[in-house]
Length: 287
Ligand code: G4P
Image 1: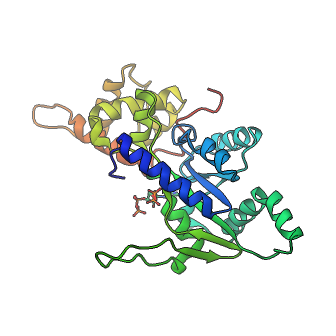
Image 2 (image 1 turned 90 degrees about the vertical axis):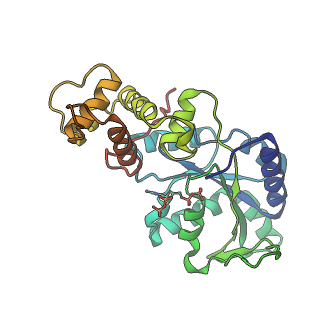
C-alpha cells in the first residue's frame, strides 16, 4: 500500500514475478471489480505470454461493485479469451471457494490433460496471485487457505524462502506478486485513489471527493447519492455545490453557518469505500 513506484521498484517487482512464474503452473490476476480496467496492470498479460503460463482474472470485491457491471465485465474479459470469475474474498463460503478452484482447474485444463496423459493425475496445480496494491490479494489467499496460511519468518537476518500453502488440489505461493498501478491519466489516478489502490494523500481529499461526485454522476449513480444523503430536490449542477449540500445534510456546519466541506469530503470518501452509497463500478465496459 505504501509503495512509491520508482522505475527501480518496477524493475525489481517485474523480476521477482518473472522468477516466481517459472515456479508455478499458472497465475491468478486479482482486479478490483469496482475498477476492472483501471486496476489492471497491462504488463501482466505479456509477462504471462512470455512465461507461457495461463491466467485467470478474478474480479474481486464484487460485493461492492454494481451487479449489472459485474456481469458486463465478466462477459467482456471472457470474450477476449481470458477466463474470469467474480469473487468476494471477504465472505468466501465453501461454494465460492469451490468455484474458484474449479475455475483455476478449468483455466489450466489443457495442461492438466497433458499432465494426465503423462500419468501425473492428482498433482496439485501451482498458482501465484498477482495484482496492484489493495485489490485483495492477501484476503484471497487467506480466504482459500484460512488458518493453513504459512507464518512469516520474523526473526531478523533470516531470509524467508518461498512457501507453498496447499488447499484442495492447489499449491498457492504465499507471497503475492505486487504490481504498480497503471496511472495513465488524472481520472485513472482518481479512481485508484478513491478505491484505495494508491494513497490519497497524493491528491487533496476535498478535490478528490468533488471528482468522485463527478465520476459517480457520469456513471449514472445520481439516484444513489440522493438516497444516501436524503436529497429530495434535483442535485446542484456543480460538484463543489453538491459536496456542500452533502455537508449541510449531515449537519457539518461550522460557526458563521459555513459548511465544513473537508469533513463532508472525508465522510463521502469513507462511505464510498465502505460500499455505503451502494454497489458502484467506476469503469464502464463499453468505453
Ligand atoms: P492486497 O493484498 O491486494 O494489498 O489487499 P488486501 O488483501 O490487504 O485487501 C485490501 C482491503 O480490501 C482490506 O480491507 C480487505 O479486507 C478488503 N477486501 C479484500 N477483498 C475484499 C472483497 O472481496 N470484498 C470486500 N468488501 N472487501 C475486500 P482493509 O480495510 O484494508 O482491512 P479490513 O477492513 O479487512 O481490516
